[in-house]
Image 1 (spheres, rainbow, N blue to C red):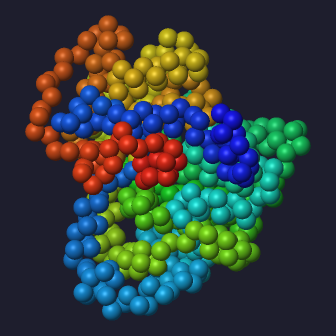
Image 2: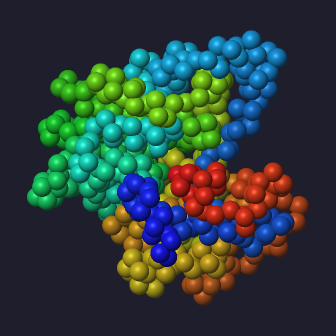
Image 3: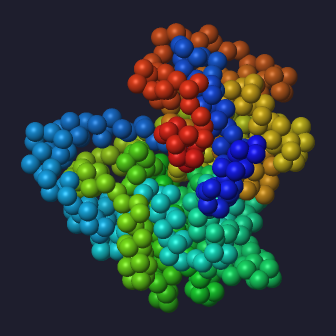
Length: 483
């Protein structure tokens, strides 16, 4: 212990403080999975990962496009002629072709109802880097951003850890499906002011993580009116904008403000990423789109610390400029996400488990309040530990998302194959049957299942999970991959 304390004295306060938020049930579930990952044949009793918001359902479409377009890569005979140019390009504005293609994709993902200016696109290292970049531009240490709950647990890391800003929750409740009301906005703002906290802005996720819902136009208009009245910033995290799989359609804040006669656009900023919509988090493509010229200018300078590699820009510029591919991809992605969501929801309905009605994202908000032994957050955590340790499912408890009501859990549905979904649903049905005294007959496990997406940890090219620490900077670390 003394040696550890001495070592900490050699490091900075930012490096050694606990503001990154890893000490929460959200990350504990990741660690439980990493130490005992499910595999259909090598570890069929392992933990199934339902806490990872990844979207590999349409990666085959991207792989097929790459095979048909080898010139989009500088590592092929067809594209190597561009190697010298790409290898030496380091302008933090980014490749013009890349910014044009991203602006075009953002428009198409929003139904073509709004256009984006490529000159306002600022790069960041994934949504994590983009969120932190915009906070560095807008907030001083100690300043606060309002955020509706429940909200993404890693916002504490992304928005506050290094910037030293703080978050003030806006209380939202299940009585109106967790919608943001003007009254809740005013209450949170007043609470911050009563505490002598300087409120610099409001941040929302639309579509919502963890709810899987989209905001209606009237709610967005109310929010824009609120921030204009208070003269504070609005940051809209729209990284799930192309994951909408059923009506109502996604409405971007960009669409709303173009309809408003009186709106200070200098206060409006959008965070975007290709990690969720395209299912490529490893390529680390994050975007800040700001209507404020100074934020674009200053943010571009700050982006030097988290640029998207030029090789990645080159590939994506070609792919996202293929309008026929983009249209086909968006349609097929919505179809597959909808089918998978329906598979999960219908399976849960068989044992009377309900979920918040949702239409977007890679997850849903599951209601297990009827299974709580105590209607408290302690009761929620007791049930969560039971699900992790006995049912062997990593779902994320609502308290980790700062949910004001106990008994809600986020379940990610897109990061596995259909057979693994079936196993997860069988485990849930068996558990609910045991808890309610209504046992459910289960079919025998089929031994000829293909590998789940998460089973890559058993591939020979990957370190054994027993050799990894969840605190290490490996790709499997919850700090790196938290989503």
